[in-house]
Image (cartoon, rainbow, N blue to C red):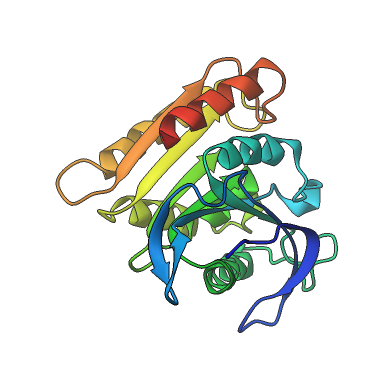
Length: 249
């Protein structure tokens, strides 16, 4: 079965009934691994990535250039890539929430939509950039499907007011994710981030490393990129691609 790519189509997710403006990009080779058997015919085992954009109140959209950079590398690595406008953004219906809880529910429903539409998915990667990384960090592991997370430019500094002073909920969500033995998380931040000082990031990273110490905890990799700001321009963009490329290998 060949999967049809589409751009800026409206997808209704269940059970909320929210309509999300969504784009699906497909890797060049849809039949690289013919390993799964589906309805008497062989189907490729597929990998899907879902990308979440920055805060809509500051102009965050699915067509963010950083997400396009990440998408290009994911496609080269064989992923089907979903980007979408969160509720109330662009042509997506609904209203943004102040806490991010509704957005987290929308993400779960969109992933389940993808699982129902794209056959033979063996791996799901959740990629959150800036505010989107808060929502991504709250996405739980799927049963019987490999689930990984990329947390890019986590807005540690402004997290409290981005979430209507519910930052502790996201701290607990990320820690809970790291405590899962099957979790696989990549965290990337720049040492010149515009919203979070490098000292705060480094202390946060040290605390997260402690969360995965001991038996029965998840896998965590943290990359601090020298010279990178929150917006990953110019040479920083190339460094970002290399970090993700190496992690995916």
